[in-house]
Image 1: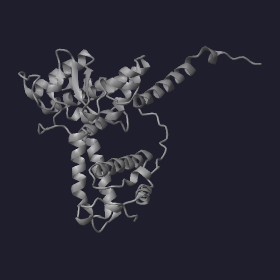
Image 2 (image 1 turned 45 degrees about the vertical axis):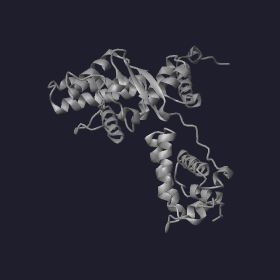
Image 3 (image 1 turned 135 degrees about the horizontal axis):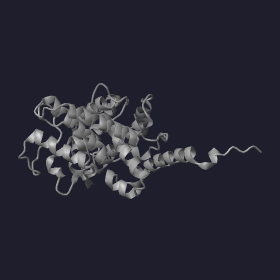
Image 4 (image 1 turned 90 degrees about the horizontal axis):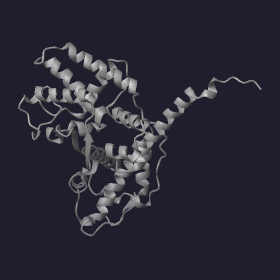
Length: 328
């Protein structure tokens, strides 16, 4: 390995990498306000990196890492997607930048790395308006068949319907929905107050009287008729009345969509779907940016590509010139 210049104190003491990683994660949480998903990804990437650097010991050797070791580490993920590899590099850049700022390292090896895999341009998967309508109609019909309001199965169907409605209605990330609390909901004004990535707040209006009625009904089923908006309880609960996890939400979405013949639908597909449909209806892209909580307009711009793709197909299908047959 290429020796790296260390600060004087660090060269004479043993520093356990796991403790430094935890310090870095705490810094990301409390100082940077990064999401739990980002923290989880950072922790996983750094654990893989430390194991790659030295499988026998976690003492000091990682401090001597150079750009060649980092490149070799990234190249070891031959089967990984380009986004995954680029994310791991971003993790290492953030980590080594932190070590440099804290003067644990005097030389940051990631500054000399120009390693980035081009991510192929892929249009995000989304559901059309007809598919969303079919899904919601199915969920509403199933719910109405369960007439016993105190029945546990009825409550579960009600929760699942409100959950799917919330994902499409608001375009929230799955983590935001999982941690959504009653105090984030203002029924009088009809909006959710959400704190998303980077601790950024945004107001999301609630659309649809049917959805609003079912949301109120679900809250009464969980908290009784005397529930109040200042409650700190989570909105979506499991059978043990604990917060419904992100993994459980994915399971609910998979089960609900599979019933109408849709495969591989994730909560994020609903986020893509509402963004695309809003664009197709002529909504300004900057409004959608704020609606989704994107920090950069570039992130939202991908939906413009989807919208243009949809518009192209509509024009090709309906253009009057395609109905003319002229032989020269």
